[in-house]
Amino acid sequence: MESPWAPLKNRWFLILWLAQLGSNVGSWMQTVGAQWYLVESGASPVLVSLVQSASLAPALLLGLVAGVLADAFNRRRLILGSNLFAAGAGCLLTAIAALGLLGPDSLLLYTFLIGCGVALSSPAWQTVTPSLVPRDQIRSASALGSVAVNAARAVGPALGGVLVSAAGPAFVFGLNALSFLGTALAVFLWRSAPQSPEDREQLGEALAAGMRYIRAAPRIRRILLRCILFLVPASALYALLPVAVNGHLGMGSSGYGLLLGALGSGAILGVALLGRTRKLFGDTALLGASAAVFGAAVFSAGYLTPIPLAILLILAGMAWINTLSTLNSAMQLTLPEWVRARGLAVYLMVLTGTQALGSVLWGSLATAFGYAPVLAGAAVVLLLVGASVVPLPLLPGTGNLDRSVPAPELGLEIESEPNPGAGPVTIQVAYELAPEEAPEFVEAMREVKLSRLRTGATNWELVHSVTDSSQFREVYDVPTWREYMRQEHQRLTGADRSNIARAAGLAREEPRTRWFLPAGA
Image (cartoon, helix red, strand yellow):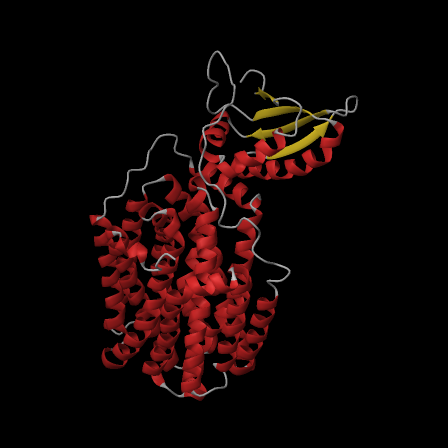
């Protein structure tokens, strides 16, 4: 069994991973500083929860655009520029806090701006991982990416709590700004493989292509659904834990940091055991069990004393890493290269946007009804989420599809290449079938339909002749000739070609393809 730490043997994976770890430590120190500043100023639970929402909401607003930029432009420069922007916003926040001019509005504003820098770079970071490690290490690399977040959750809050008590919020805000500068330096020194500027998709068409892919990818949509189902109730813990610490736990900022550290420590332990737990349970059962364990910790945050709560938070950290690393690696392994950044951007939008909206929801309910009963309600929802893996499992084939891009055999003989912008292109594929093969053929064409729609088709239909029951036609449109060439040469993967070959293999003879453009194009 491959060691979960194997990707760290790659020099640049290690350097960039350490840079991410340092940046995440800084972000968690800032979160503690910001939330505790509001708690000590007597802010309501909903205002405290808005710190998390302000840091995560940019991913919901900018995530898809960031994914398009990461697929279309130089990812290294995008990461570098985004981290410099976040560092600049962090420096301004530090200066305002040091001058004693900080208020709740300005705190949330600069937290949002820093979040914008993080959101713009996140899809590019996610896409870099498969280029740094072999495919058989992607699951481990994904888990280590989660370790960079959760190890920071173990160290950052505890360290942040101590530093806030000793030096005040401005000091931890400054350290966070420095962490972004450190990440920018590491990325500046890294020399990534050049991205070809040839045939670069325009922003609008890249955005449309990404959305078409998600709509026609049931495995991806199921991963996103599992993410939403878990994170809506799970976000209650992070939103309301500082309120509980200031309430019945009575621990102060250092105690809050230590409890968040327990969560992070559990996540690190979870990575060490991830291979064994995944092998023992399987991905879908692991998601269900993790939701139930996390629910127990959410409930305990409203009622238990610090020591038993800390023990359950360690288990919750393991459940958190099991869930997010399973979903993240499933996305990484299921998405093809051409749309990976856009698909991961949607995943990150769901991941962070759900937490941001969930934080507001639970904070508002806690303001109205008290934090303890609201945490109990969120725990019940998590138990239901765990049970929902029975009717809503990860779909077969998730993470195991052939994502190579075989060369097409179009049989296209034309005197001159059409204008790349000409379109729409209508493609007709004629099939002749024996009557007994028709039911199986129609079923096989359901997968072909999804393959065409994922890779560029705007509509698709299968028709048959009313005079000859053996004759079928597949008819679909692609917006432009350029998009059709991309579909055939860059987007149809080995799994897609297998779907098409399975259907074509049921025909009596080789299917015949015809291409049509509007008259005069």
